[in-house]
Amino acid sequence: MITSTNHHPDENMLIEFSAGTLDTAASICVSAHLHFCSSCRAKLLRLDQVGSQLMSQAEPVEVKDDALALVMEKIDSGDNAAPKEPSFHGDMPFSVNKLMGTSLINKNWKRLSSSVDVARFKTGQDDFEVALHKICAGGKTPKHDHEGLEYTVVLKGSFSDENAVYREGDFLLRQPGDVHQPMGAQNGECICLSALSAPIKPTSPLGFLMKPWLRINPM
Ligand SMILES: [Zn+2]
Image 1 (tube, rainbow, N blue to C red):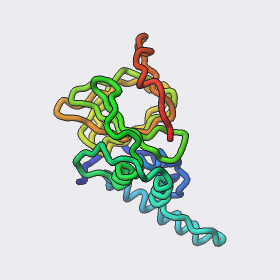
Image 2 (image 1 turned 180 degrees about the vertical axis):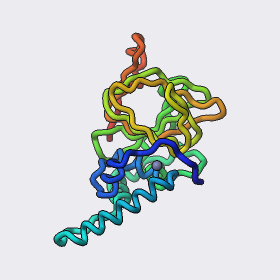
Image 3 (image 1 turned 30 degrees about the horizontal axis):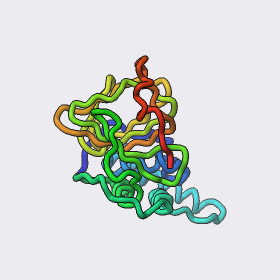
């Protein structure tokens, strides 16, 4: 399925992805976005061509594998015995299917709040927690700031915050100082792939009550 996405990784991120230097967690999110976004795929193709031209002009060096293969290799080094639940229907990016098949940590969705469930992945790196988040129809997440980076790719359904509505394929990067309150669309659940380098920072004075949200588990 091809949807027209409105939110994309920036040019620098695609350059690093093409060069194979983008970190694993970000690469997983970029490759998930590429599944939905023909314009970023076209950009990446151009970058790959430029890259291989530069390489052919340079002194002979070890040839790099393509970026996605590198990511998959890293994922493959994770624990392959993980259970396959949860599953959901839809047209999933290859990188996500691969993670679902090999790297899920919890057997079932884990409840983060009455509106949000999480399923975490083992991706063999210790900087980011990589996970699926499921927001129920109309479900609210706590209003929060960010202590680190948060990559999000919408895989199914849509959600909105104070700034925009995000649909399948949309890629978001949130950074410290970006305060928002995501809310699931009324017409169905929303599933997102996310990578967090630090726990979210609730803006409510009662935020300390939201224990499950206040730690991440990079693995
Ligand atoms: Zn794009």
